[in-house]
Length: 384
Ligand SMILES: NC(=O)c1ccc[n+]([C@@H]2O[C@H](COP(=O)([O-])OP(=O)(O)OC[C@H]3O[C@@H](n4cnc5c(N)ncnc54)[C@H](O)[C@@H]3O)[C@@H](O)[C@H]2O)c1
Ligand SMILES: [Zn+2]
Image (cartoon, rainbow, N blue to C red; front, side, top):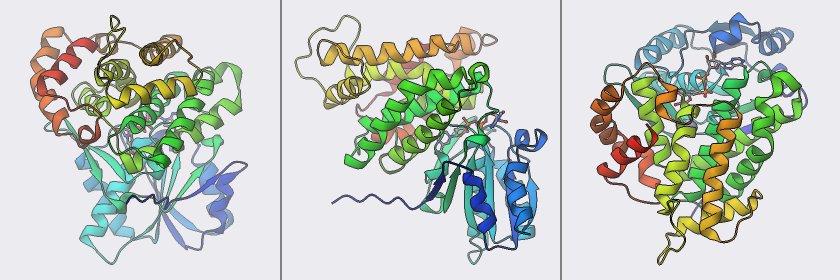
């Protein structure tokens, strides 16, 4: 028996943020990305609270890849106010910080369970609909994925106004994160009808709108930004129940050790992970005993219009297509291009620890091919 539970209420399309004016709380605690505060973007949220005479505090001690220390500081700030409603405004970093702060505040004060609304300002993590939060241990340079139903927001508000200011390079990084979520969920060992449906739609939206969303600052094509915002949410729904795979386990290491933005790290690893999972290299033309993920990747490839001769050619097409999107969006395609200041010797010196940590990452449990430590080290070397 399987189950599929979509708990978060999602508000989307036309002025979705106006939903906030109907909140019945007298006070709200907002955890916001500092960019949202400094740029004034936060006013798109607060103006509705003001109109409804709801008092609010804005807390913006948020950094990319939030650390354990930032969670502790956030818990103290939230518990000082104990507002009945918590709103997260920002990318995955702000939302994950808010999720973790709420969880630990509740653990310390079990009677305190603030209503939780997530308002994403990037189109990437899908964190607004997931029970995941990623927190970085800056002492050990490890990213920990917390997984707990309590992390799931009660509401998500998807309003394109919040993502229009996203610069092209961040649209590229975050959009490739969507692609990685959808494809990893699609071949997860836990994949089911529901996750497949969301993953297929998310990947198809990426195929049609990711590069257009990247060009948005020049073209002002709202539609592409809107579609990627929905794609991000769909991919979040897909991986929330069936989890991810080793592309994320590898990306978590590259983020924790070298601060490569999450989506950029996923984009670099994704084509190599597809090849690894499918056991297909450029020279593969026949597979005597193909893994079930070969037909899944091939199916996805066909669904998004990458028609090729047979399953093996379709899988290769999918991997090439991901690379070509990266190139079109001016993204680094190798680790060494993403971190030019790091030498190969320094990278090599960290491979053993990174591979150990990647194997222990919870995303590895649902990868379609069980990797050994040597496999992960080899993948890290391939993508250097
Ligand atoms: N919880 C989950 O399910 C999940 C899934 C994937 C990734 N993550 C985590 O989320 C984090 C990454 O989140 P992200 O990719 O959204 O990036 P992010 O939240 O770290 O933001 C990246 C940068 O974009 C800026 N930014 C955000 N919104 C903007 C806007 N509207 N206009 C201009 N600039 C804006 C931020 O200030 C920041 O400098 C990582 O820590 C990753 O591990 C979580
Ligand atoms: Zn991700």
